[in-house]
Length: 260
Image 1 (spheres, helix red, strand yellow):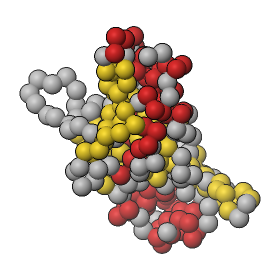
Image 2 (cartoon, one colour):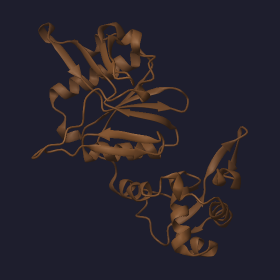
Image 3 (cartoon, rainbow, N blue to C red):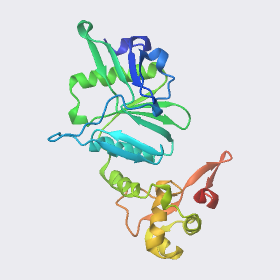
Image 4 (tube, rainbow, N blue to C red):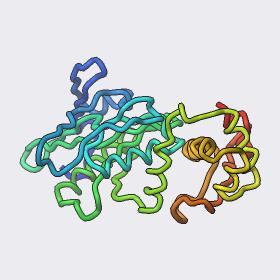
């Protein structure tokens, strides 16, 4: 099948409901399913000698574990978890299939399905640029066209920028709500209203051992912000209050936002 000729009726979709029941049908009929909440279409095996690392990542966005099949998929999960516009993620959400050359069925299981805050869907495949074979390129192209046919976006992503990823890996360690201390968070919002150095600002609030975890949690939640691509987080990193949209206009994040 030529990717330019794909329609939603040409694509068969198979997925596993939360109750464990497998469903199958045309994409044109099944696309409204809340795929961010389904079970993985396939398992994440672990065995001696395997050349990829499977596991489960606890997502603050989902409030539960999401599977991955490589370190690169895990990194991409972290970035999705860090994205404030993402409200849900599932891994190996469904298997797509279509008629290929000579009528042989071609099958492809995307890596993630993402639900955004505006209700739109995003299908993600994770593959480094230098590991895309011709058959892979065809699968990605057909998947992209099929997604567009039902109003979803599609992205094929590779290795993230190194400095950004290193900083997000650090902040991931402070993503859990148990790190949050409302009284410390409110004080940090006050201190960084006009911006300031990371460590100096933390010391103004109190004991840095107690304050820094809360500061990193606020960075994770985007209440506070830094330039995560300019360099690795350090004592001198400039921290400022995030500008958020409130009441139709731009305003800085409030103490109420930090305490929630």
